[in-house]
Image (tube, rainbow, N blue to C red; front, side):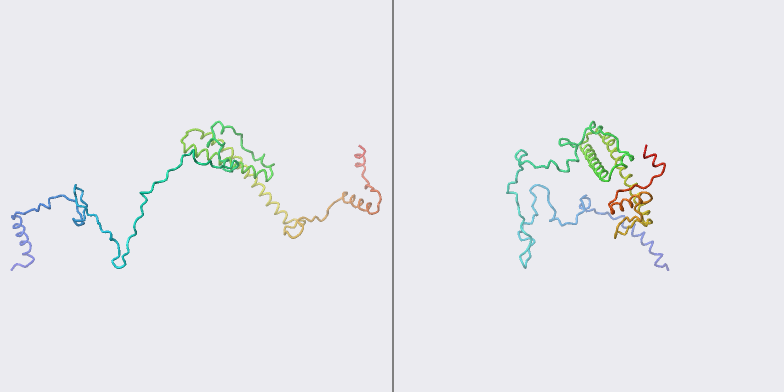
Length: 261
């Protein structure tokens, strides 16, 4: 007797033969190529002429059935005339401070960027040897003059880039290079002075005549005068107390001959 597993393949082949001989009816709705939509037909928006509008005309839409509260009414300003700006000629003049610091960002009051000829009119930068003889106040002033000059050059470069002028870039870069040389020299001089100050502090720490505590006199020398200068001061002091004439100390042979000459 055949088992169930042996009968299943034969039954499946028989069913396939019988089902292939039966003519199939295709539904016309399946042949239509329409986009897949999950919305109900009544909720779709019709685009053909004289189509029925599906707009909700209920004025109570969104209101609570218990409290009668809902959306607020929208305010419309479409009926109000819009204001028109005044012409430039009717506007009051703008008061500008003639001494304002922002004027230093521009070469003059008429232009926003210097011409290439004006940028070429500059000298060389300050050398380190020249800056070593300057005081702290002079170096401070010169530094901020260089800062203002670099700001002016940067403003002109930005205006050339914005306006696509296409000229003056090389001349402005040359002027900026000399300004940066000066600023680099100022930093070098100040660094040298700082190192010299540190060395002086180290020497003062080991000097018994200098007090760095800040409580007393910073410098107290042990001997004010030495040698012959001290003797002369002692004689002058005694002569003033006794009311006598000041007698100079005896001079050597060489000193006497030099005095006669």
